[in-house]
Amino acid sequence: MTGEIMFLILTLCLWVGVYLLGRGIFAGIRLIFNAPGLDRSTLTKQLAVSSGLGGILLLVSSFMPKDLGRANPDSWIPIVWIYAPIPGWMLILAAVMLIWRLIQSKTALTAEERKSRFAASLIWAGVGVAGFLWLKGMSGQISILRGALPLHWPMVFGLAGLSVAAMVAMIFAEKTTAARGVAKKFTAQIALVVGAVIFSVPFVWLLTTSFKEERDLANTDGIVWVPLVQETYPYMDPEKPLYEASFEGHAVRVRKDSDTAGGKWLVEVERPYGLRGRRFEVPAGSLKEIPRDQKIWSGEVSGKLYTAFTVLDLEDGSRLVEVMQPAEMKGQRLTVTPDEVEPVRHQGLRWENYSDALEWMPLETGFGLAYLINTLWLAGMSVLGTVLSCSIVAYGFARLRFPGRDPLFFLMLMTMMLPGAVTMLPQFLIFTGLGWMDSLLPLWVPTFFASAFNVFLLKQFFSTIPMELEEAARIDGCGYWRTYWQIMLPLVKPAMAVIAIWTFMGAWNNFMGPLIYVNSPAKMPISYAMGLFASDRGTDQALMMAFATMSTVPVLLLFFFAQKYFIEGVQLSGMGGR
Image (cartoon, rainbow, N blue to C red; front, side, top):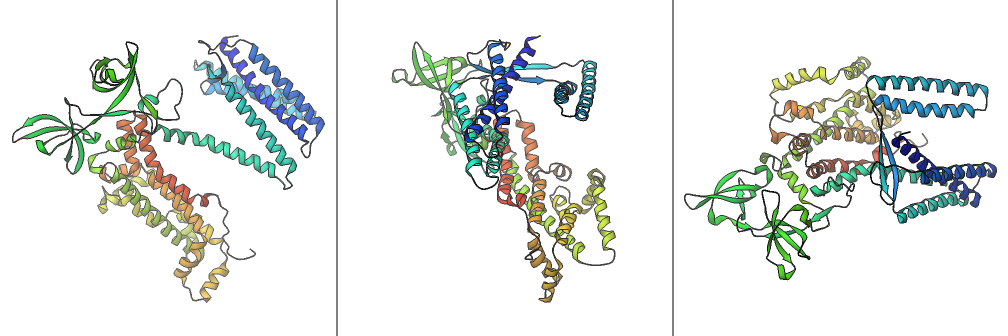
């Protein structure tokens, strides 16, 4: 048996033992509190089996040697992962299910059940053989990746205490609360909270990464959740002074390149990044010198600790620094290598990632503002057109009676069978003939002509509204338009809100449409800006996450303001007692 397989077995013993021991503790607490509906003999058996088997597995995993494949840390918990291609996972799943079905067949109560379980085990055996042959044919292999988590005993005891406290609270609520299902609801809420925390981890990572420095993005110690910011020092560089200037109406930071005729300077733009390298002439006296934000480092020389800021980054990778502290060394300049100093950092957020990300946008887009305006206009007009046109058409099909209504409705539904690739070229030719190319018109004008799915959805909602409401409106003198606007629309408001949300998200994330109909970068939406930024600066994770966060915030705000329409049950009849 190889070291990898032994490590896998012992790791499984550890975690299964922890689960069984926790199950036994839960059974013991239920016995102590005498929970309602308790079968003491069954629960005592469960306590004995779970605790005994869990204890044995923990002892086996603790005392058997586990080879990590490298130097073992002092205190650690083993973790393992299986890396395999698809046939490898098929083989693993088949092996697990085969063992499980064989155990079930041995513990079956009837001969018929035993026969069905055994037949299922044969099927899984066939699946395992097929996976093995497939894996062998493709010359694939199953790899076992060994890892370790640092063991902190205070954290272990704290988690164990919290788990026991949660078990006691659940059983106490089940025992003492008279209301039915309170303990079940409490457990469900805890599960929902845990699920929400787990599924929010990617968003938290996105948000925290957008505030990180580059050195924290690939940390060998794991993910850095709390961002750290390196301190800086405002330094007036006499050799490469930095100036503020104006270029085409934009505030820029420049450095002098050379003198020109007429008392002018030729300067080169350093910031913003989208204009970096641009050169232009300015009167020498119109420039205002500003300091550079130089990074601060700490190091040790001749047994003395010092802090210094960067004066110049040298070509060989070293840097020239000027000492700030201690006082007796202040002003001294040292040449140090990166491994001789450490950054002086404090907990904080690097807000500059957001401004730096916007600075990479093309100049004609106003540092991305044009993308936002275009997207808001596109999403707003799409929502307005979809809601108005679909509700009017759906109301007509649901309430008006006219010749050919049903055939027309079925004809409209048949258009849902046409793939988008089929209608793409005809639409392109139509919009080209109308002269709408290089504009947003082809993206939002069609929404004012209704879509089959949304019409079908709203028609079903309109059909559930009692006719008595419409008849009462007619008696009061309302025509079709007023009935539609004041009576019917408020009753289907939740359905329209859901359609509006779908439309908003579709327009916000539309990437293919702008690429087909729009040519000018200044007329593109945010989805195009995301693709452009990913192609140019996709390797800079912090800036990429900052730009992604800015493009996601409006959608998140939409969800928070309209989330009740996703979850609430809507009473559409409006009639008492119905």
